[in-house]
Length: 105
View 1 (cartoon, rainbow, N blue to C red):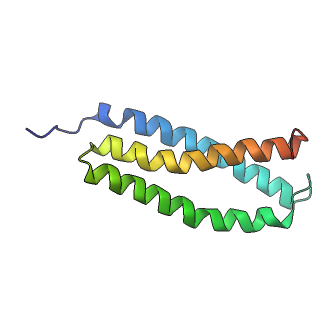
View 2 (cartoon, rainbow, N blue to C red):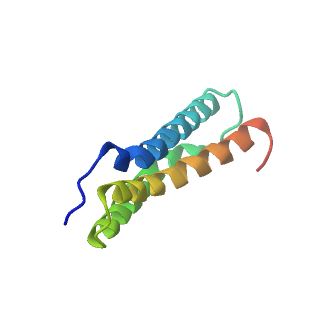
């Protein structure tokens, strides 16, 4: 018998997506302040922000596809997809915050 999708099945994906959105906003703010000259941001960062999008979307779609082919629930598929995107937003937020505050290379 197939599992009926409920609102509770989407609770964890919603939490993960919310965390990702917060981290993405932090990355946007840090990159904008860097481009405005408030902190030193090299030209590689501007290129990186474009290049990483293609890879992140590809990884996310692949993770969701693999979970779906394996027969996972829609919530698990969403977590797989969001997890790939969040891995990048979290890493970018941490890296840029360290650069902007002088806490790292």
